[in-house]
Image (tube, rainbow, N blue to C red; front, top):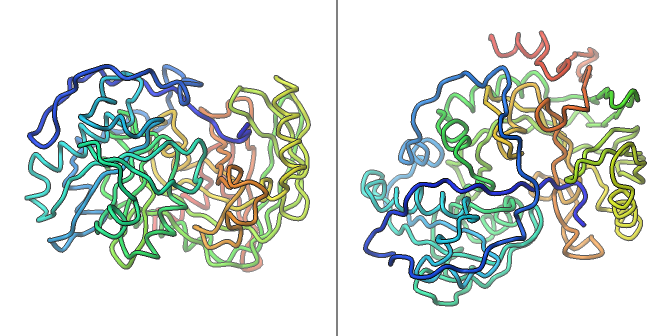
Length: 427
């Protein structure tokens, strides 16, 4: 089982289907999807930014801000389905569990066809589906289907044929699409796990502002030698030390205006690819179980049960033993945006005051761990382990410290940005 990954139930939006001439009406009900209906987020999620107001979602503004299209580019939308052939005649949208895919159609495909293509002088607006991968950032299959039921190749029909690709999926596709973007020259955005909160907040912001805020924090964190994170969980204490080697900090800021690249939206983080790591840290599994990770030479080597399912932790230890690179620490990230929690890691890891470490492949971030180094291709995921008051309420981060240029700075205290981070943002 994919131990570090947290999956959530997709909840129906309840809004009626819209119809455009190129996409026929739904005629029958397909089978229910069960592969993603696992754990639902809490009914109410709040934080200090929950009362912040945002402008209404505007697809034209989002695409204009993120991509600054010059006009004439071809754009398409990708979704994932257990049976991608069910995109034919949009039959899949009759299933109330496909809420992510429904948002892709209603808020993006319809939006493009209802005026955004003309407003931004774009072309296309096609919708394609590929088979759900079952894991975060696993390589994508090449087979896809169009809404008229044709079986096609993603490489020839999508990667080589479109300039801007919008992937709205159940599992993150950032890593594989980044590799394909560099190979075939397109730009894109990945927006997995989309829900109404994300649409009305994380995708409704001005990404010029997001980029400026992320850059202020990046400049104050770049060149760090190490970061130490203190944890408390169930009366235990732990500390994880991540060696960064004075590397240049990177930022996920949402702007994708240059050469081939893929933006991960919502964006808003400063991140590093650690060169090594040592210590211990707690982790919450998808079933709510808690365990203490032991980290040595940059990898999780074992997990010790703290509460919950012994079987869950045993399965994780078996995976670490059979495929050790699955425990490699491939990322350290800090959120930079003032956003309400959404119940989806894609947005909640971007919230200022949160942090995350990730295990697995890191090639899309500039790291060296590529899919071919895993014992099984199904293990070649990149899994974010988010620490936040809404995702991990039983785990606290009393303090996270960053050392750069001979000085140690506190950056987070109990999921609040430190005085140092606030001073950077005020500049």
